[in-house]
Length: 377
Ligand SMILES: Cc1cc2nc3c(=O)[nH]c(=O)nc-3n(C[C@H](O)[C@H](O)[C@H](O)COP(=O)(O)OP(=O)(O)OC[C@H]3O[C@@H](n4cnc5c(N)ncnc54)[C@H](O)[C@@H]3O)c2cc1C
Image 1 (cartoon, rainbow, N blue to C red):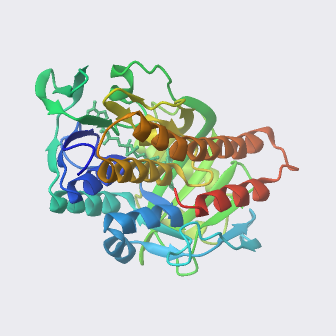
Image 2: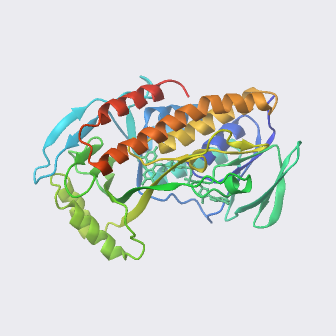
Image 3: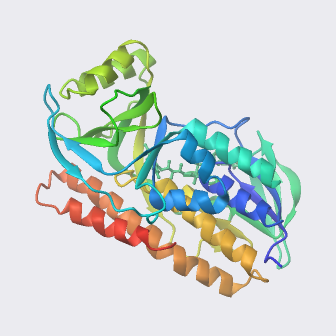
């Protein structure tokens, strides 16, 4: 028995597909509604820590993900300057336990493709190009409408529809993501041989410069700056800004600049933060992932938290007989403190950068969060 037999998932990002895979594998009838006409993943690459990899394993997707990504241990800190001197080599906590690498970089598009294949194989029905527009609830079911038309009656609607969640609004939660004051330039480039793990540069014209390997031939590189209105910037201007702001950094940055000069695109976005106080459900509708919480990627835990939301929720839904208050209480008890700790620490790390606080114990905060993430979700 499962607590639900028919579920609608709104959104086909990492959190939505993870929930769909786990439910469909347990024999639940799953419809996934995605507003975009096809699967696209915004941004270039993503860094996934052990606790995210552990969830992929539970979904049955770890083998494919391991083959497609670039696993690494530890973190290198470098300084600005033509030779990009190495300042420290830091060990990582294996947040997924000894069976998984500490971290892995992946092209976002590849991750999305793998999760979609697993969702379809498990039997989830995918509906692209349809937007959830209304919800109507009774004690017995929730009716979902897409594009203004009734889509069906479900035992549960999972709103995994991201930062600007429609489901969040439809169930009357008015918490909205807020800017943290930082913006990030990202580009997807070739990987110099010497880059074998994530490397960060503190100091210089931006708050943080860095890159993460995503495959044998690829990595993503980024520059974190004071948030600015970059809305009217053309592709050429974007590349020019990334080139100019990266000039203070040498070493592997020379190759990154070569790729930018040959046409690698630069993308800009602001960091946000928010956390919806418990409960994340209203009756038979619940929000997970970025719909419920967001944070700057200062410890690269955003997607991992969405995955853990999906994992814990679906574990409860497939191991209980009833969708009752007891289930929701356990869901929130397992998810809220963990997600909140990640959001608060991620925001604090960014704020210390903005304030130029050189005495802050960033290492201690990161280590403490990693220790927490190493516990099962
Ligand atoms: C610059 C940056 C770098 C990051 N780096 C990392 C990192 O290295 N590691 C990490 O763990 N996290 C990182 N994160 C966070 C991570 O990207 C997010 O937490 C994660 O992708 C959110 O996944 P999601 O499934 O919750 O939402 P999303 O990926 O936003 O998916 C939501 C989906 O819902 C769809 N949708 C929206 N409204 C509707 C509707 N009404 N009907 C139907 N569909 C709808 C959208 O089209 C979208 O496809 C980063 C975030 C940023 C901003």
